[in-house]
Length: 362
Ligand code: CA
Image (cartoon, rainbow, N blue to C red; front, side, top):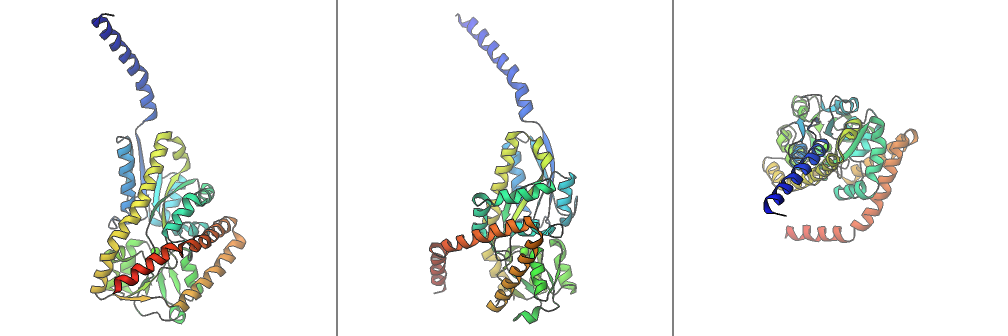
């Protein structure tokens, strides 16, 4: 073949390849625009930020073809309407804590964190390798939702109190902002649980509409300013040993996505899941030091209170399980998994952490 003929043939082959490839590209990489409603205010760069990490990943991995615009709580729907908005298709997806929807079904309460359940590492082990994601999705499918783990806060703090809480008696009649199953456990102990969205907690605490409030941990709680109106900061948040946030996707919208976009979305959710935990762990140490410097009084829950709450929790799970097979399945799976995990965690990790913590005190 002469050089000119070769070039002509090569050009023809390229043109043919382009002609074949172009429609295939158009088909597999369509422009898709979704809306995500977050359960959180923009001011919280950790928990709200995870949705932005997710959205950026999806956009970057698809050369900007798949855009998911993130809206703060209240911009499209409020925190407590997110599940309904996804189920009805008002928005394609949400990023939220499933326990906000405990009123729809207590099973939603067990998905974020079962009080006295798993720590953050164990939570991920259960979700990804302990059958957790399958059980969660078996349940959320009834609400037309596909659920992906989307962040972990780490073990949370036990909330801000205007007065010291030394015994279970001190909880009687106390109005506390606390979500999900934990609120029902607190009610068994005599407190009056209140469901208040993140952005509305500070004014309620300041006005005295509530006496106590729990949110997440030092970094977020400092941003929301609770230390200015409630000096006693209790730990641990036994109701959220390792709270998992979720991305909830409408199942019809999910089914419409090309396989490649589905894979990107799933990987982006996993990235957000890791990044949120990493960020909390990186920013909490300085935050707790600033809080204490500003007069915050740290207090551990007494073991008497922890034990009373544990007993109340088991009673509650028995009551719900008797009427709700979905809840029972998830709670039983989590509990069995937890008992196995702590069998292992007490050996290497607990011993290592204990030694290191004792050492840093010297
Ligand atoms: Ca919390």
